[in-house]
Amino acid sequence: MKISISKTETTKVSRTPSNLKINIDRTLLKQVGKFKYLSSIFTEDGRLNREIEMRVQKANSVSYQLAPFLKHPNIPIKTKAKLINSIFIPTLTYQCQTWTLTKSLEHKITTCEIQCLRRAVNKTRRDMIRNAMIREMVGTTPVLHYIQRQTTRWFGYLTHMAPHQLASKAGYKVTRQKEDQGRLGLRV
Image 1 (cartoon, rainbow, N blue to C red):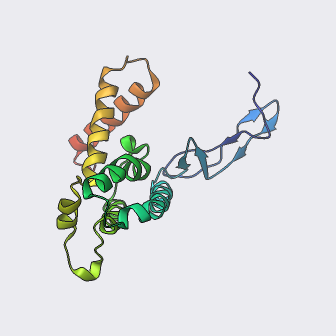
Image 2 (image 1 turned 135 degrees about the vertical axis):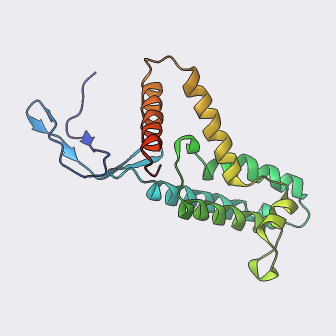
Image 3 (image 1 turned 90 degrees about the vertical axis):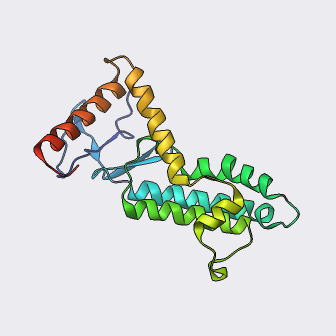
């Protein structure tokens, strides 16, 4: 295998940005603040804002493409719910297993979800119907519950991995750091 020096970039994920000086054959590799890999965006500060914005944009695009079906009055709501659960939700939550969401990110995700659900039942915010009632009408579970299930499932995979595997090592290290912060009374 040969590394393409002109295409290879580096980034350092840290709370304090600093320059990396990584050389290959005496050529300094370019350092970037963010990069895209397998449809995920990695940033040097480790925050998910860009990732969630991209996921919401893609989910909105899917929602607009599904709009003729979701708005059609002769399509049963169960069929619409299946479309939402099989196409829209996976697009919105792609690779959500490792997300750590803040309240503002949760709000963005929930807003995107509710817009799609309202389209399915042909109701707008002007109709003054609560989000919980809209979810009940469509028959879907909240997207944040779906994300929580995926995160729990991923944690189960981590606990069953061999200790020498990289994902297991990383997960164990994060867990230990949170335990140490908790013992010291620090905000987790």
